[in-house]
Image 1 (cartoon, one colour):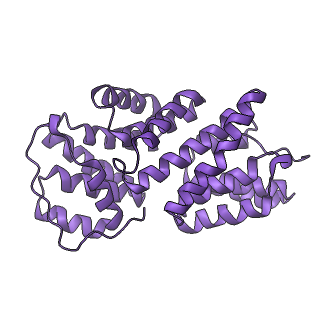
Image 2 (image 1 turned 180 degrees about the vertical axis):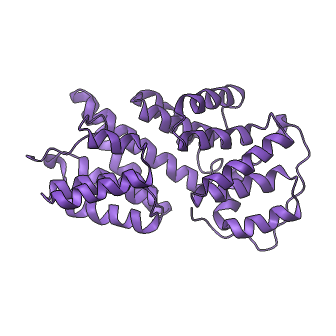
Length: 295
């Protein structure tokens, strides 16, 4: 995640209040954007019992796909304060990454019932609903984060919400009737372009645009070459983004390159053998949209 560099030397008070007061998630996520895990760990060692310092460190580990380290950090948060909603979100996000989706979903629903402004929990749950093909539920969750606005949501999560909402609307357009196709289809690209203006180097932005130009029907502007450019940039920015390899594999199949189709799909499964989207496309179930070779 990229973000505006915060002023050097910014000091944080040791967090000592109860869970009812919560953490300043927007501010802490913005700080995590400006730090790598090395610097975040240095700051944590100065205040090892600070939930704020632990949360920032956990988020940087998540961003860097250091999931085991992130899990350890969020577990430490919960040992210090078992009812920390932020620590519980971190645990739920780790469970999602392990594909323990139902347990993750249960925790997230409990978090949101207690605090429906904790937007990282809403975004994790929105993605899980997407994977369950409960697209309308996911849409409502992602839209609620967008509606919070940039005054209350850090930029990276706001961009993530825009991209997720665009992806869900793509599914609603694909599987819906004529009115759903028009209503949802015409809103996808504006959402992705807004995200691109805010964070042009965010991998989620390139993945969203690449998927859009790959999956949109030819009559509305499918562009395989443009899709490939965005998807290759996604992988350049985030080499372990398994779903980007899946969509790139589909682009190569659309270009009638079966060898690279198989190679990219295999790479996706090597990165994440349980990837729901990779398995779906490999098995030709097409819940997450197959590209028709004859189009």
